[in-house]
Length: 87
Image (cartoon, rainbow, N blue to C red; front, side, top):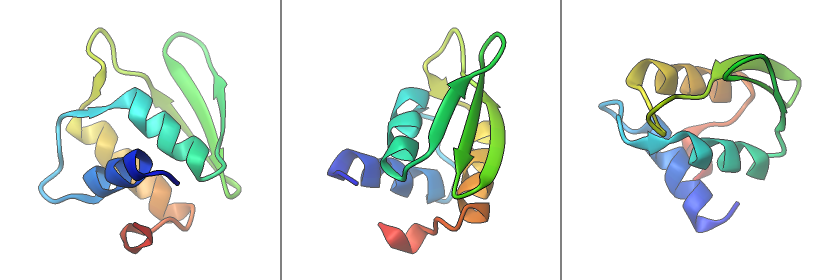
């Protein structure tokens, strides 16, 4: 993981939940962990990380992820064995 990916992970686990995390940064960070990302229908994105699967919607028209989606990404990371202390 590079410095920017670590910063994104830090923002995902930050309390209170952030509202200015770019989805493209989240995808880049997930790829840094070895996630497989594939396109679904519409704005759906399928992600598999360490055998854990999830489907998210890319935000549009904004590029930043809303707080609810960020909490879902956080839960996905925890289920995939990624913890905040890996920063």
